Amino acid sequence: VAEPAAPSIPRKGYLELPLLRMSKIAALAPAEQAAVRALNGPRRTTAKGSVLVWPETSQFHFVLDGWACRQREIAPGRRQLFDLILPGDVVGRLPDAGPIDDSSCVALTSVITIDATALARRDVQGQFVHPGIMSALGQLRGKVQRRLMDHVVRLGAHSAYDGLAHLLLELHERLADVGLASSGRMPFPLGYERVGELLGLSEVHVGRTLAKLKADGHLEIGPGWLVLPRIDDLARQVHYA
Amino acid sequence: VAEPAAPSIPRKGYLELPLLRMSKIAALAPAEQAAVRALNGPRRTTAKGSVLVWPETSQFHFVLDGWACRQREIAPGRRQLFDLILPGDVVGRLPDAGPIDDSSCVALTSVITIDATALARRDVQGQFVHPGIMSALGQLRGKVQRRLMDHVVRLGAHSAYDGLAHLLLELHERLADVGLASSGRMPFPLGYERVGELLGLSEVHVGRTLAKLKADGHLEIGPGWLVLPRIDDLARQVHYA
DNA sequence: CGCGGAGTTGAGATTGTTCAAGGATTGTGG
DNA sequence: CCACAATCCTTGAACAATCTCAACTCCGCG
Image (cartoon, rainbow over all chains, first blue to last red; front, side, top):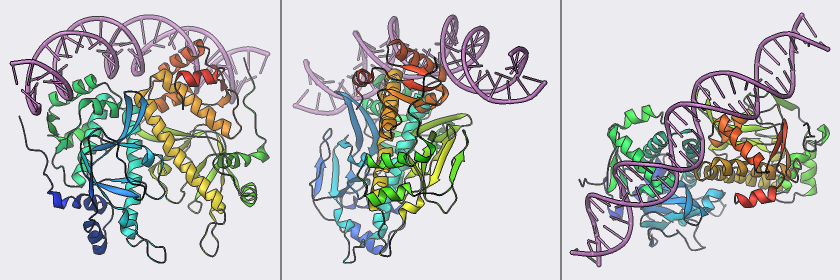
């Protein structure tokens, strides 16, 4: 039952993803849009399972393709995932970084990033050359914290069923923001064990709960993708957003 | 079995608490310490159960006495607590506030606060008059995010027993920082239902789990206070930071 | 063809919840 | 000083959610 994945973005259009992400927050000036599109540093590929690292000289990066996560190792082989990092997201040490920006960032699939430090350039007065971009980046950091709070609610106050539904709905929303998901269909490259590490559930129970979602007609799933066929119903049912 | 609570702070010494909190992060200049001690605005008392609010003109406040929390209402009568706010902590809208700074802040006991906006004063060049204080406040905001991450770990990766132990150890550490706890003894004005709302547990299970901690010789508890008699053992046992 | 990873299924153990009732403590008014 | 209500803690028993272990399937890949 192989279905096509979500719309794929041509390699040369990758930079549209962070642009879309930022534009969802505030309109960028044409010059700022051009500055993003003009990024032409080397693209760095991080293999699935590896920690994302960058040279000391760089401050932050855009994720152009692939999924990663923020996580903490609790014990050998046991970890808690805090947040997922999706195509179009920003990683690195923004000015005023918080602890979450410093937590280790691990590739869950093969991940392509590009250095975006150039966008933080300042003029001779010390003002940002692209204030709109810097403001958008600051608000993106705010969204990370907001998601962390949502995650606490999922873990503390939701059943496995509701928490899983919330997670999928949140991911759909984030992917839709950058054009990678629409009308319930989205890429989904995570194994059940990773989902379990996000939600504090065992791999087996993730499988059973997903099966329940399927049985309720709320989910179709295949290798690397999934569909929420009645996404509005589901959102209402679990009181999403 | 009434035991004395933790050392009480005389009313006129309340401002030492935020001072201690900030000093744990970075040494403040003598002038900055004096500026904190010189705060003399009216003290505002918020009744247990009420939301903490402040006039529009003020930016942030010190909590001088009492416990409060960050929380979100999930459904009527159902809420998730994100973090506790203890004496000496800062609340309000710092510059660069994140979503958690905006979340509703509810008094869990009677709470006394004082306006500290004056400390954010700037000179004619636009520089902060008390840069050490502002830097400390920024790092305190970072600690909030760090605690939010710890909370995710407690909720997602810990058993009730371990999570509860972690919570008590964290509170002891924070209270000890401002001189309100030492060698395992600390004030503890929370009911079990509140603890349950923090940890995503039912009130009944909180009671049973605390009983288990008592049975293991790790906890003595009374009205408004508790003792962790073998705090180092406990910290080791549950792998506390 | 065989192998390994990922998903599924079943059975039993554990953990945590719910409901309900009983005891202790505290504050209040008579 | 006592009676009363309110609140919080404790306990028991039945139930539900989730975990663990283990076996089995399915599929992609060398």
